[in-house]
Image 1 (cartoon, one colour):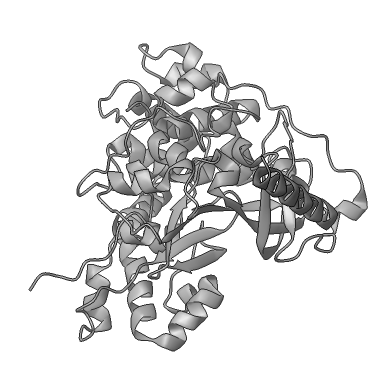
Image 2 (cartoon, chains in turn purple, yellow):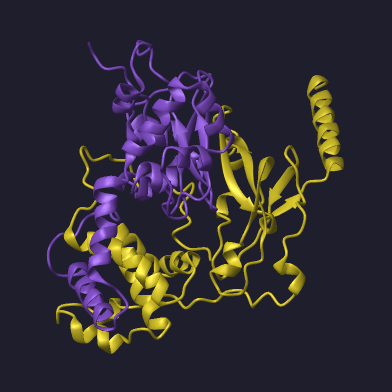
Amino acid sequence: MSGDHHNTDDSGPAARVKALEAILTEKGLIDPAAIDAIVDLYETRVGPRNGARVVAKAWTDPAYRKRLLADATKAVAEIGFAGPEGGHLVAVENTDRVHNLVVCTLCSCYPWPVLGLPPVWYKSFAYRSRAVSDPRGVLADFGLELPREVEVRVWDSSAEIRYLVIPQRPKGTERMSEDTLAEIVTRDSMVGVAKVEAPRR
Amino acid sequence: MNGVHDMGGMDGFGPVVSEKNEPVFHAEWERRMYGLVLPVVRATKSAFDEFRHAIERIPPAQYLASSYYERWLAAAESLLIERGVVTREELLAKEDASIDPALIANAVPARGPAAVKDKSLKKPPPARFVKGDRVRGRNLNTSGHTRLPRYVRGKSGVVARDWGVFDFADTKAHRAGAKPQHCYSVAFDARELWGKSANRRERVYIDLWEDYLEPIATKSKSKSQKRKRATRSKRVKP
């Protein structure tokens, strides 16, 4: 699909980015080491594991779940996550009756502090165009079929609010610890395109 | 602007394809590009809304043919050149001869709203709407930046929540002032947005600034109810 391809060779965008970085460095406008640091941060430290910890805590601590639903920015900061694209976080909870799905039709807004940088599919034209008009069709692309009576709520992140879906805790995980639960929560479930599955015994 | 970036509800892009074990970046240049954006925004003294708008100003055919970080690259080049931080000549001198100079900063010029002169607009007005109010997306067609997608213009919804006061993206992206105002989560039924064939159990919640919304008078609601009743009685006696 156009728009999702990747140019990995040294011509084209690679050469342009190299030129850009060289000029900005010459002008003293950037510090290449600072760029290394920010890239490393999002490549190794800020990612969906953060959100998984938030969800696992909400599953096991009813008071925390309440605080998360009331003010996600604050509740997420409680466990140490904050930063760009996370100034106004809102958590929406999946239940037997309501399934939430997050999109940004105009660009690709995403809750960086809890999910890291968005995957290619989230930024794809296919997702941005159809999530609002055919959410059940999009879920089918991910192999998820919801019962007919479930209401689908699509959240289009068109302003400064960034959304985190609290997926349903799967049956059969009642005895699992918060840490173990955090390991089974997936990125896709926190965007709303998947359910969390209990690990097979 | 009514650009190709405003994709909600478009057809033809095919299925959503997810990549297994996807890396955060797919190439070294994507990594560098990501790291460059914040310094570029800072060097051009831009609001992030200006960067977003620079992406929207990429000519439509190029936008559709570009990957995500290629669009970031094009937007960064445009802002740097437009703000006079870097010249086109400087960039081309550094680049490989194989690069097509026509690709560099060929953005559609920014044509945004004039500066907000009224000082009273610097202070947020009290909220015009409360939860439960019926509202309509206004039919605005600005040539500048906006976060009011086409698919909700002229459509009726219900205020689900008042998120509080936020600076207005439409003016901020053009350095025309912050124009702080309330921003609301507005719920639209899928059938209102996409027609009668849409699923009754689907709803889109979208965050809209107050300037994007107009009230739907409760009077017209009772009128429409009357009309409904009238049609129903007509149907009863053929």
